[in-house]
Length: 399
Length: 67
Image (cartoon, rainbow over all chains, first blue to last red):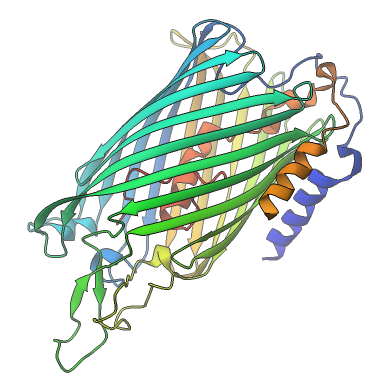
């Protein structure tokens, strides 16, 4: 807690300090403003190979009423690519295949015979972006599929630079049409239901001097349709009319609205020390209120190219949903209830570190000219006992 | 309302214009506003394991992450 508070104070000071550090930077050539996110200035193809690994364990799986193992591993290779067709048009795409090994979801079908169940989730997105003067417009679509869940996404975004590119306004909207297969708590397939999600986001990014940039994000999400997970169990409170440890399926409302606002900033304290930080507030109509704060302090190592190491720190606190209850505490005649710990009250910490290298553009890996490498390794610990490890290696390349 | 006030406040603070030739430091890798792709998996964890969607918290639809 103390470290988080110190990080928050440092991050806030770096973002909002008067002048934002206006000393000139003689070490870099002029006019090196970061390029637009989606339409590079020069034609070519850039991309990144990502290799992600995720491992979690805990003892409160909602698949078994909040009592069983949450052991889960995910191996997730992803390719993201950006093709700048010319100085106005660009295509952005991503494709990935998650390999998921889960001990608890093995219990949702009739064939409980193995220690774990292996599933795959495939996903892809494509965006067409066009730059018109200081504006960029993007139209996107996407698709993901796993054995019990399919999702189709359409999106639209618009950004505009103002004030000699010192201010950027970005808005985006996305709509997800999802289909949930209804494997119930006895493993019986009972058809499918729809889930609709609309995301709206607005952000303003402002240069606050030669060494500081800050962003405010506002987001609103509306979900309608079947929002329960059909194979999540709830162990209801003891009753003379029910057998011991009677289990029923989770029941959640069919509407949920989520709101979030965040502020984040990056500040170069010196040419070799950059502080990144942010805070976000969240609440929703399930009754959850959450606060998150994170910090990364990037230290540049002496090398011919850009090379950075950084510690990662994040703290999150959320209140419980009004529908959440511990196993054996919910009345069976209650309209809505869940034992999903993700909707419970908890604090969580993420800590770890990363390393990033930016090449000079003349390094090749076989036939592939690669430009950057970033690795991240983090541990996530939740106060209810859930513990996860996430690692990621990203290889950036470009032609 | 608070969000609108903050947005207007930040937008209005751009009176001290930073010229393009003064932005060398903003080109450094850790100064980029967007999160690096290598951070996506952490965002996904936050979305699935917390009420963390929105405002730089990642997408909200697709995939149940339900185990």
